[in-house]
Figure (cartoon, rainbow, N blue to C red):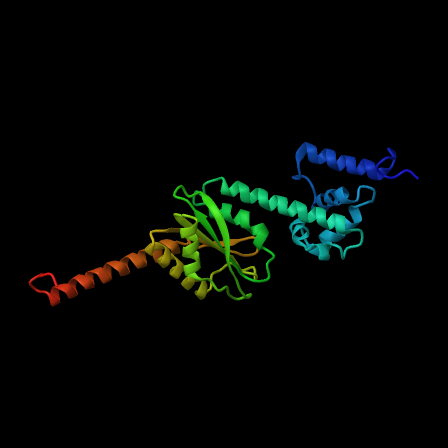
Length: 263
């Protein structure tokens, strides 16, 4: 019996051809999410109708993003999606992630919190625990490396300022961007988030490193410490404290040595 791909009169072949031509003509902008999944599934099962499992995948995971973020085991729970399909979807996800990583590593940060959010949202959106990342930058504000520093519970992540600073020294970084997620979906910072950011800004400043931002990723939105003026505030607080300590040290020295003689 002739298969669907070789039979020119098979309606499935015509449907797939139209989908492919539509993609080549205008990309994915005019596609429904299930149509994108259908195209992906057709690469792994070229001789089977993929519309039904594609629609079921969107129903189960909510969006195209949800399908791409699903594990192979979760995908294969859907009738019509086998290991070849799951492998293909995972491959597309990893290729897209690597492309975005390479793209952002080649470009200056330019103080764009939105750009960092767009890059990391796909990788961090569905995490069940908090993950704290550091983006290391050179003196031209170009991202030279990213590092996962800590993974915590749903409520908090244990971050070592020493590890963050050691990474900056190792990568010869001049600036830092901190990013972590809130699994609850609400990106508003907790008091511990504020205290951690203050501590990291202080530690970086003491070694003449610049903190550009701390971004908290929520459900399709983010909170920027720099955008809210908090990075600048913490930096100013430390400078004022250091100036106060220096002034007090000079005053104490004058009291102990009124003739300004060397000890």
